[in-house]
Structure formats: structure tokens, C-alpha cells
Length: 211
Image (tube, rainbow, N blue to C red; front, side, top):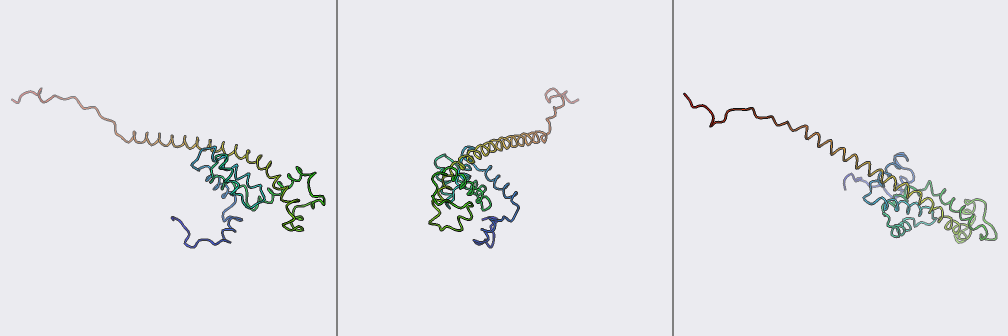
């Protein structure tokens, strides 16, 4: 493969790069944004794929790509766009915010159906004190229920933003390519010298006979 590393990175190096990119986060965000905009699919498919990735990022389970793939199949989304959307929106820096918001939202929805003993005030304290088998009622159930409305809201928001950006990007690229083609055609026309008119002269059969 062209430009492939001679010594590929190991698992821990790839994990470190994923959590802390070698370049700045703004450049990484620009890179993923351009990758999404340049996908060879319809604006709806790309926008639906990004929305599926954003929706799956709110769930506290480790099957985000599987959830995004099922959603792409249901709403005719692009799978590559879903993977890029899940990577951009759901990462180690945003997961605490997304999952905390899901838990708080689910707690509001299930305020009358939480366990009788009552959960701790903070999610971190709950995760520290309870075992995994005890997390379903006070933690996982509210997070799963709260992830649905938040995922729908942010998924629809990113669908509209991505679709508008796709249409604007392709229209701008179409105009740029048309201007480039017109400029090249004009340069070719200017490079061809104009045809000069032939000076008038006597024809051979009208020439006077030699003396």
C-alpha cells in the first residue's frame, strides 16, 4: 500500500493516538469532516449515516458500530458515514458527558420506578460502590432509556446539519469545476492563432502569357 508505515503501530499506540491525536483536535475534526463530505453517496445517505452514529454514541454498551449498522439498514444510511460520525461524536472525551446526560434523562423519566433504596447522588459514586450485577436497575436501565430521546434529538439535529453541508459542499464543488473547465477552454481558444485572410492574387490561368 502506498505511504504505508514500515513499522505499523501496535495496539496501545493506536489506542493512545485515538485518545490523544498526534495533531491537534481541530485538525483531526477537519480531517473527519472532509472525509464525511467527500463520501460517494447521496446527501440523505451520508446524513442518515452520521445521525445513526450520533444516536448510537449515547448508549452505554460497547456495540455502537453494530447499533449504527442496524440503523443504517433501516433508514438507508451510509455505513462509512455512520462509523465516522460515531468516531467524531463518541470518543473517550465525550462519552462521560453523553452517558451522564443519558443517565440523568433516564432518571427523570423513571423517577417513580427507580429502586426503593435510591441511587447515590453521583454516577461515579454509584459505579464505585456497586458491582456490575447491581448496575442494571439504578444505572444501566436509566441510561438505556435516557439514551433514546437524546439520541433522537441530536441525531435529527446532525442529520439536518450534515445534509445541508453536503448539498452546499457539492454545489460549491460543481461551480468550482465548471469555472475551471471554462477557464481551460478559454485558455485553449486564446492559444490558437487566428486564421489570417489570404491576400488577393492573380490566379494561374489568368496570368498574362510570357513575352
